[in-house]
Length: 114
Image (cartoon, rainbow, N blue to C red; front, side, top):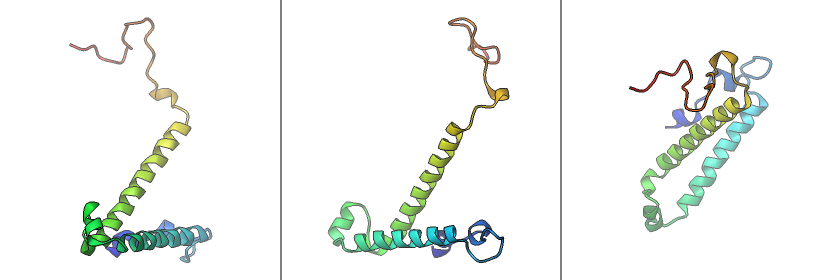
Protein backbone atom coordinates (compact mmCIF):
# COMPACT_ATOMS: atom_id res chain seq x y z
CA UNK A 1 0.00 0.00 0.00
CA UNK A 2 2.83 2.40 0.84
CA UNK A 3 4.39 1.72 -2.55
CA UNK A 4 1.25 2.86 -4.34
CA UNK A 5 0.80 5.94 -2.16
CA UNK A 6 4.36 7.13 -1.88
CA UNK A 7 5.83 5.97 -5.17
CA UNK A 8 8.14 8.43 -6.83
CA UNK A 9 8.86 8.57 -10.51
CA UNK A 10 11.86 10.09 -12.28
CA UNK A 11 10.22 13.51 -12.71
CA UNK A 12 9.36 13.79 -9.02
CA UNK A 13 12.84 12.82 -7.82
CA UNK A 14 14.99 14.96 -10.08
CA UNK A 15 15.84 18.54 -9.35
CA UNK A 16 16.12 21.35 -11.87
CA UNK A 17 19.73 20.41 -12.63
CA UNK A 18 18.75 16.81 -13.50
CA UNK A 19 20.52 15.20 -10.55
CA UNK A 20 18.88 12.45 -8.44
CA UNK A 21 18.33 14.70 -5.41
CA UNK A 22 14.68 15.76 -5.13
CA UNK A 23 13.91 19.34 -5.94
CA UNK A 24 12.48 21.70 -3.37
CA UNK A 25 8.98 21.58 -4.88
CA UNK A 26 8.89 17.76 -4.89
CA UNK A 27 10.12 17.57 -1.30
CA UNK A 28 7.55 20.15 -0.18
CA UNK A 29 4.69 18.34 -1.93
CA UNK A 30 5.78 15.04 -0.41
CA UNK A 31 5.91 16.61 3.06
CA UNK A 32 2.44 18.13 2.61
CA UNK A 33 1.01 14.82 1.41
CA UNK A 34 2.44 12.92 4.39
CA UNK A 35 1.23 15.63 6.77
CA UNK A 36 -2.28 15.53 5.28
CA UNK A 37 -2.49 11.75 5.65
CA UNK A 38 -1.28 11.95 9.25
CA UNK A 39 -3.83 14.66 10.08
CA UNK A 40 -6.71 12.73 8.54
CA UNK A 41 -5.64 9.49 10.21
CA UNK A 42 -5.35 11.12 13.63
CA UNK A 43 -8.73 12.83 13.31
CA UNK A 44 -10.49 9.62 12.28
CA UNK A 45 -8.61 7.58 14.87
CA UNK A 46 -10.11 9.73 17.62
CA UNK A 47 -13.63 8.71 16.59
CA UNK A 48 -15.36 5.86 18.38
CA UNK A 49 -16.06 2.61 16.56
CA UNK A 50 -19.74 3.53 16.44
CA UNK A 51 -19.07 6.85 14.71
CA UNK A 52 -16.66 5.21 12.30
CA UNK A 53 -19.40 2.70 11.46
CA UNK A 54 -21.76 5.60 10.75
CA UNK A 55 -19.46 6.83 7.98
CA UNK A 56 -18.87 3.29 6.71
CA UNK A 57 -15.32 2.68 7.96
CA UNK A 58 -14.00 0.02 10.30
CA UNK A 59 -11.01 0.78 12.50
CA UNK A 60 -8.91 -2.02 11.01
CA UNK A 61 -9.58 -0.65 7.49
CA UNK A 62 -8.90 2.97 8.42
CA UNK A 63 -5.57 3.30 6.63
CA UNK A 64 -6.93 1.71 3.45
CA UNK A 65 -9.97 4.02 3.50
CA UNK A 66 -7.85 7.15 3.95
CA UNK A 67 -5.44 6.00 1.24
CA UNK A 68 -8.30 5.44 -1.19
CA UNK A 69 -9.76 8.82 -0.28
CA UNK A 70 -6.47 10.59 -0.98
CA UNK A 71 -5.96 8.79 -4.31
CA UNK A 72 -9.48 9.62 -5.48
CA UNK A 73 -9.03 13.25 -4.48
CA UNK A 74 -5.79 13.45 -6.44
CA UNK A 75 -7.46 11.90 -9.50
CA UNK A 76 -10.26 14.47 -9.30
CA UNK A 77 -7.73 17.30 -8.99
CA UNK A 78 -5.89 15.98 -12.05
CA UNK A 79 -9.13 15.91 -14.04
CA UNK A 80 -9.88 19.46 -12.88
CA UNK A 81 -6.44 20.63 -13.99
CA UNK A 82 -6.95 19.00 -17.41
CA UNK A 83 -10.33 20.71 -17.82
CA UNK A 84 -8.85 24.08 -16.88
CA UNK A 85 -6.02 23.54 -19.37
CA UNK A 86 -8.54 22.72 -22.10
CA UNK A 87 -10.58 25.81 -21.30
CA UNK A 88 -7.51 28.03 -21.22
CA UNK A 89 -6.17 26.87 -24.58
CA UNK A 90 -7.66 28.40 -27.74
CA UNK A 91 -9.54 26.00 -30.03
CA UNK A 92 -7.60 24.58 -32.95
CA UNK A 93 -8.79 25.81 -36.34
CA UNK A 94 -8.75 22.37 -37.97
CA UNK A 95 -10.98 20.80 -35.33
CA UNK A 96 -13.78 23.36 -35.31
CA UNK A 97 -17.10 22.24 -36.75
CA UNK A 98 -18.65 24.71 -39.19
CA UNK A 99 -21.78 26.42 -37.97
CA UNK A 100 -25.05 25.83 -39.85
CA UNK A 101 -25.82 28.59 -42.34
CA UNK A 102 -29.54 28.79 -41.55
CA UNK A 103 -31.63 27.83 -38.52
CA UNK A 104 -32.66 24.19 -38.67
CA UNK A 105 -30.00 23.33 -41.26
CA UNK A 106 -27.34 20.75 -40.33
CA UNK A 107 -23.62 21.34 -40.49
CA UNK A 108 -22.05 19.67 -43.57
CA UNK A 109 -19.92 17.14 -41.64
CA UNK A 110 -22.76 15.99 -39.35
CA UNK A 111 -24.69 13.01 -40.80
CA UNK A 112 -28.45 13.38 -40.93
CA UNK A 113 -30.50 11.25 -38.54
CA UNK A 114 -32.40 8.44 -40.23
